[in-house]
Image 1 (cartoon, helix red, strand yellow):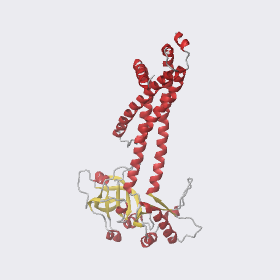
Image 2 (cartoon, helix red, strand yellow):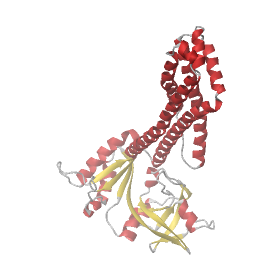
Image 3 (cartoon, helix red, strand yellow):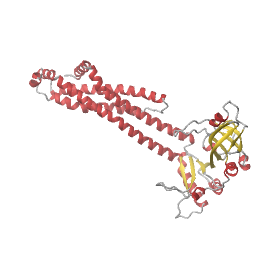
Length: 405
């Protein structure tokens, strides 16, 4: 019997049991749709994380005080004061693989303007901070090196601060706000960045000269961090090695002493987050793939029932010359058609499902290879779980099959 005729017979058999065939496909539809949606969410989340980190600058390096500790061991408070102005001066003098450098001190508290107030974070930075973070001022201007030298009480603010303290639409530039009783004059408003992947509002921030925050607000002589940017992303490791050597020399550390500082790159963070998202995606896909396994078992069960119901038909076909191979191929083709049809519908359902996820604010991106893999898996399921029923049909004795009631 020709392949074309086998396809016609398989189509007639499927059409004769539409509801049963649909129930067989349903498991495949749900499984394929679930796999595609899970992979789309995983891929979309990974791209979203990458974009957020790239917005912060993939060549950004952060120097933190204190040696790296693991296993939950708490760092000694004295280790948190290891970054001094002398370190900043040494970096500025000796840097080759670093472009911009900004000492950083931070504080949290309430910002107040008139009867309005909001809880926020105050960052003390240098002028180069805006270049490091690629964060331009869209209204007003940045503070200047002269403001840093004089420890001027000026600041630039994020959009959230503007919305909370000036809800009536008043232009904030030039207005005086208070942070922990210290007055600051707003000289600029930062470009809005929105929320990052960790749910943090990046616009709920005030940036002021680091000297002002250190002297007038915190009364400290050390930095919380030092933020730098490598010349290029590819030179990040060279910059880390250079900064390590500069700081070890500045801190007079001997060869056998460990660093009393830690340097982290955005590239390292990106790799860690990507690895984490890949692991989560694999777990979700494996969980969704189990439904495909169940669907395959369902197809095998339906095909076995079909073989039993059509025993007489099989006997008649064999008695008029149909070979066992023809009977086997007939049932295999039925199984594959059910599986692939279910896969096609599953891809469509999965594609529509990603739009629903996007509507609810979940980042999605369907990788093309996930659709190809879905079709391959459906074909394997059709062949794999249709083989046993097909062989059972092919091995029937024609005479016994015709007598079957």
